[in-house]
Image (cartoon, rainbow, N blue to C red; front, side, top):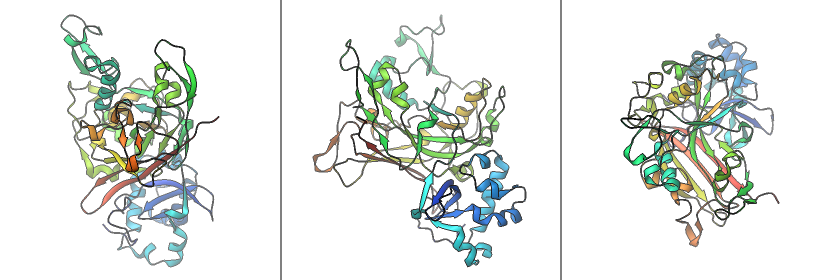
Length: 436
């Protein structure tokens, strides 16, 4: 499949992708719905008459696509998402003259991405951050609790032949993974890629057994994550079953869950609520379907409500780069992959609703830090530097243990197909000095 739009071979946004986002321009500052194609944005408000003709089941497209968020479109459900995407692929294909040969319509329908301002893709009502990487959880546990007690009880259920649920003498007990751990997050501090983050302040313990002091974070970190947007939700008291979970997931974005580690011992509250950055383009599950694969073997087999027997992980290659304030160039810090996650996206969503919790269009669920088994696939500076014991060396003798003022972080990710990429663009952020 090829488009009449010229698309470089290494573009994240070929016709096979077509992610949705919210954009505005200097000429038209009203945020509205667009689709990325190559280095262009197709303004969906400019082609509503074509939607009325070719996708009649999509009622009032002018209203849906003139919204400043994707929530209205998300709420319509997967059949309409798919019909819309099929139509867009058709209208953008090289063999369809309807838009290709209409110079007047083309001129008002396309905007260069460089000339656009991107906004949060959805109004995020609720945000949950999962902790679904066994490797990340293990690394952090070994770091702070030792190898024999690496994973917390909420990650594991410990069993011996006489007692269930006793968390003593852990060396002699078998550890079993039974559920995806999740935490409620702060949706108000989620920002779109390119937004600067002010270094947080809070209380930290300078010396063990001494009173806390107040000051800027000195262990500021990135966390390599992805996140999925809920499309159609569920009613209070209802569950989303595992075989229907993908019908409720609209699409995925990159996510950097900024963290201030020294605040966590006094409670994770201030260490995690000051900023979370997501990429602006939402890649739909249909675009990712060719890259479905098997995730890690789950032992024991999960309880029936979490069990799926089809490939449910995605082969998405992820990378983090960092540019120190004193440098002009970025250095790759880590490479990981979404398929390393122990718990799949479907399992995360299903577990979230198993108690009857209702999800709504635009709700966001983060995967948790995505770390692999090797040192070069660790998803945070906490792991890469082993809590500051090691340093990362950059050019000209610059060294880092954690993020300093003026440093910039870039997350990127893509799937590699036959002659094309399905990408997510970039998720970027720069750290500004703490408030005085």
